[in-house]
Amino acid sequence: MRQILEDPLSEADCWALLASESVGRLALSIQALPAILPVQYYLDADQIALCLGHNHVPSRAVTNTVAAFSTDAIDATTSQGWSVQIVGTLAPPQPIGVTTDCGQPTAGQIVHLAPATMAGQRLHLCPFLSH
Image 1 (cartoon, helix red, strand yellow):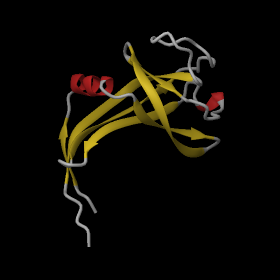
Image 2: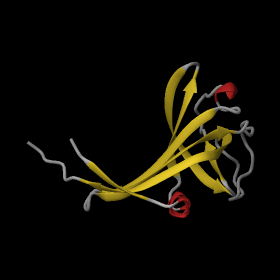
Image 3: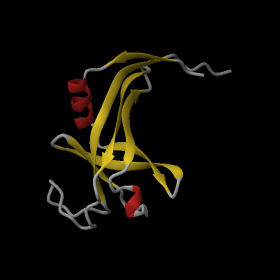
Image 4: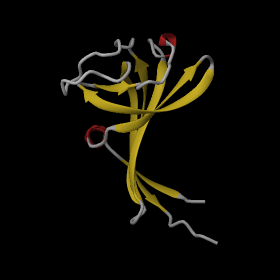
């Protein structure tokens, strides 16, 4: 098993690292069951705009509900990287086909996550030993 040693990141560093990636994982409850969805995202002022893609997510699961979001980057060669986790409230979804900042229509619903808490850390993984 890999051991993870962590170095905490400032909130400003977390925002900068979030801006450097575009794919993460959204954790929420769908019909009282936990779900983790891979999502594309972009920063929209002080919120995270998440594209649900073509996943069928009931609007009540993403309307004024608490959810968690995470993204990271790990270099397999150096066993180092970072991870950022956010907990916050999801705003009601925008309808499919809304134009995004890049001028293209979305491929699915966009929801906005307003962060309540944000935590990040630099990761230093122990090398994985094969037997």
